[in-house]
Amino acid sequence: MANAAPADRLQARVESLRGQYGKKGFVVVAAEPWVVIGDEAPEMVERRAEGTVAWATERLQAAYFDDDPAELVEIWLFADSKSYYRNAKKIFDDEPDTPFGYYTYEHEALIMNIASGGGTLVHEMVHPLMRANFPTCPSWFNEGLASLYEQCGEQDGEIVGYTNWRLAGLQEALAARTVPSFEWLLATTEDGFYREDPGTNYGQARYLCYWLQEQGTLRAFYRDFVAAAQTDPTGIATLRKHVGTDDLEDFAEQWRRFVLDLRFEG
Image 1 (cartoon, one colour):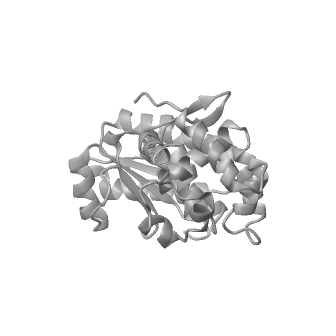
Image 2 (image 1 turned 90 degrees about the horizontal axis):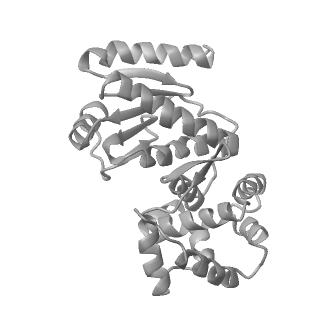
């Protein structure tokens, strides 16, 4: 199947998964370039495939991503927490460390507790798309952009992120002035971003992306970051360009006031 056209590979995977899991109560549908597998009613799985997966894919690709993931990525939508934990173990031999969902490179799969909502699904979809289009993307921007679309909608045909539940914790830390500098955040390695998180890395990265979005420069930032990645692997020079100053301490104070003025009614 390695030489088959992408559409043929997709359909072959759909048929294979239907044969393997259809009798076990799973519905399998194609939502190019993904395969969606769910254990809810067929009409609900199809609605999620069209209304969330296809909707977000079209808009994320229009905004950022030219290339589909090289490998076919399966999106597993488990109906509730019980199904999620049981089937993550049974099908993938995984024990999730999050109640919402995650992307596994090993299995090229998004494994979701869809009862927790579609926001985490869109978040996790960003990761394989980023991997295909910007493989050297640092964790701060990979997670910042993905987190931006945990709470999202559409304006003028484009995907936009809204304020979300991460805001309260970030505002508390900003008020206490315990949020690290942008120089520190952007310099984090993958291990540093995830393992040395003072509790604000995701929120800080998300609301930096949110600020760029609200200034109308997020997509240009992404394109410039990709183009300059060899000489600016952390994105700090690109950020300075897009915030209009070399003094990131001064920008951080402006951004701090911006974030403290935001509201989320969740």
